[in-house]
Image (cartoon, rainbow, N blue to C red; front, side, top):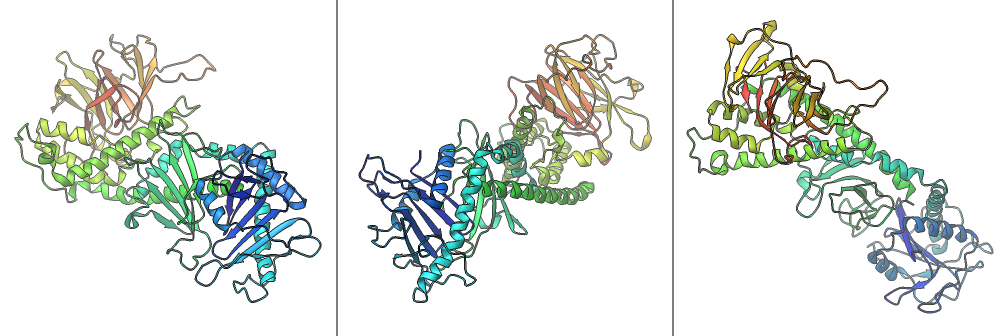
Length: 621
């Protein structure tokens, strides 16, 4: 059982100790230290509980009110099992009194107290007598506690001790009730705090570029709540931080020091959470009473903190989603006239020397944009995979991929303009390097594609390896047929192809049946039924399962964007997909799942053709 346990509530922090001698030779009573930052310190101990010597079992004298408090604390700590850092031990050593005073309260309590002066420095410890005959603490008086040691010191200190003791007592009462109930609040916290949920908040555009270590990019305030994110770095993982004002600064404190905080760190394998029982799977929870104090693991016995964390998380999520909606509205309006907006610096004109580096082709500004864009691509793809892998999600029906916030949304316009410049150059080398540095972001362009996309209605491979694609006509005109060359680099009109045929809604790739959904995700399902259209059938029959059976879990998933309308496979190595958002995607087999592409399949996006009604011609990406 731990020898020390600590916690805090509001402006008070406290530490309970069992009688023992620590590794440094410091002796501790069965006692309680309560501190109100730079105002008062109180030390209460059970008389006769000083350790008889190192290695000897102390005889604790749990009496009256302290008995229940200590028992609740020890039982709770036995469950939590992670308190008493070396720094807390040093703090206790500095605050504890020297030899036990001779004056004791009538019920066997040793009580000492001290105040702080106007400069925030501690005054001398002095014995404090509790109420005569009973040893009980008096109720808090209407007069605020006074730091002036010459003005009725005992009454002032007792008035300060009463609310502090009441808070400690309430803290442990709540902890004991939670323990007896089987820790339901901890279970609720674990259910609410999931890795994908926290990752989604960190990746929201409202927090992109946020870094609480930099005053110029230190998150955002909404009412009394501060919300900040830390992006992954070489020495740390991503984290979400929630902060609020907790009391007032005292003499000698740094500016804005009186802010408490909760921090939620995402743990990437093989990282493990620190010791404790409050951490949900894949997360590490910590808290701090003031900015200047080191963070500690959040304990399961901190019931008020678990409740507040749940409340603040919901408040932060609502705030960030509202900010996201506002941003989407603003950027959506800007996307409407994106072709007319100013573009990035002009690219080098072709022909481009093959030996030129990416820095020579794009320049420093576009390389910086690429790094930010691809970091967002990997982050979003990882969040999507975590969402798909969440327990109980055989499919993404509970939350579609397009609903996950994409951190690249704020960069959608400049990258789209860059894609147009690259397309207009017509240089294969430049396009290959652009595609490698700027993975398409279906979620970032989803609202615009929904309004302006021309549906790709049918696909047919040709004997020469080229692909025919029938695309919805503009302004209610007949479908237009386009022919894409066998190397996927050229597209030309193909009026001779005739009217639009029936769409093939399934295909086969490496022995798996492929189908898509209305959100734009392609699935690989186990088994082949022969009606993929490769034998001349229309392949339009939907996949069916026995009545009452659950849908089978997909072997893999790959998000493309827009309702999947048609598929066409070209042997075991390639497949083409058309969607309602105006996307024709040419996929090839890959040896591994690309980290920056939104899927779990070993598929590589060779080329994407975009058909929007605000484009003068199909745009290659």
